[in-house]
Amino acid sequence: MHKDDMILISVDDHIIEPPDMFKNHLPAKYADEAPRLVHNADGSDTWQFRDVVIPNVALNAVAGRPKEEYGLEPQGLDEIRKGCYDAGERVKDMNAGGVLATMNFPSFPGFAARLFATEDADFSLALVQAYNDWHIDEWCGSHPGRFIPMAIPAIWDPNLAAAEVRRVADKDVHSLTFTENPSALGYPSFHDQEYWAPLWEALVDTETVMNVHIGSSGRLAITAPDAPMDVMITLQPMNIVQAAADLLWSAPIKKYPTLKIALSEGGTGWIPYFLDRVDRTYEMHSTWTGQDFGDKVPSQVFKDHFMTCFISDPIGVKNRHEIGVENICWEMDYPHSDSMWPGAPEELSAVFDTYDVPDDEINMMTHENAMKLYHFEPFKHIPREQATVGALRKAAEGHDVTIRALSHDRSGEKTNFSDWAANLDKATASQK
Image 1 (cartoon, rainbow, N blue to C red):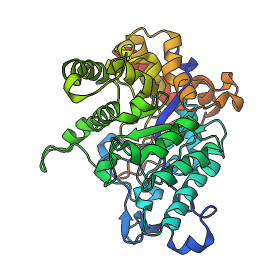
Image 2 (cartoon, helix red, strand yellow):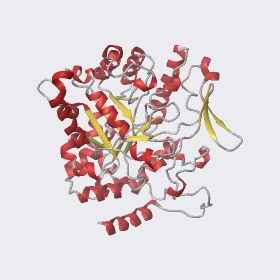
Image 3 (cartoon, rainbow, N blue to C red):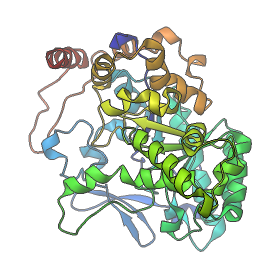
């Protein structure tokens, strides 16, 4: 398949929330207590909520920055791409990158919105609902067919969490962000089936996917205090491997045959070994551990319940049939440092060509699996012929995708995305 003919839907991108997000959705009585974005004397912008100050986290908003500056923190909204926090500008960036639609995880509240858990249950729930309504009605609603809506949970109360899943499902939302390890946050683990039962039942009843994102437990794989940053970045997917094992061996996986879990930003190359290992564990130890998957083995159960995603991941694409092509989605990770924006079509095309991936399998991994999993129907709003990489990039002609360094004034340099893509095509071709 030619790269311009691909249709790309990303199941893992991120929002840097705008300062006015609570304005239209939080009850007036809570307005003075709401989290607020504060512009500091040093030029930085930080979210502040009560005694908590949340700065931009390193590598979280570096789209459009040179790699040499990835370790330098974007200090304020004026120093990052507008597409990070403005839905209209995000769509322009998506067009320039040839991406039809994205699903966007939260930033300052955390992936599980634990920040909103206060001693005032009504206030906490109001914050969650205000965030969800802003995200669904304003961010996603501003451009139908371009965003897969996602809800944050009332994680501190499984009954409230379940009620919120059902409330947003009435708005056609079938995606919930959640922690990869509730025990690490001080809540009962996934193995406490009774405690989380209302949430599992709400997810199943509404066909909502639980998305567990790497790092959402607040724990990262750090081997030693003086280990270089490269160690932590290399080991980030290990968080998702732990979550996969935890959930696969949990009781809800056996009780709810239609429960769906997405392992967000965890890659896919590790999965074939993981499946071999869980089957070996079951064969050798289930008689004394008491595990019982009936007439299936754990690797089959994994494929029934889990969706995985990749950015480029050549090893995962090579082993896609061992993973299950129907269990793989693609992600762009905009605006984080692992993102391939705006060169996703070029990078993906090189990987698909290397492993002779047929068109039907490309379509499954790049958009069809995501549409099915999240009940997302973009072609109700955008004709298929206008949703391809080529068509979207044509619509974005003239949109600036210049790589800008904070340390240099490059305002005079403009890079049209079509020129940029042509240059990348030449570089990619030379590597094949």
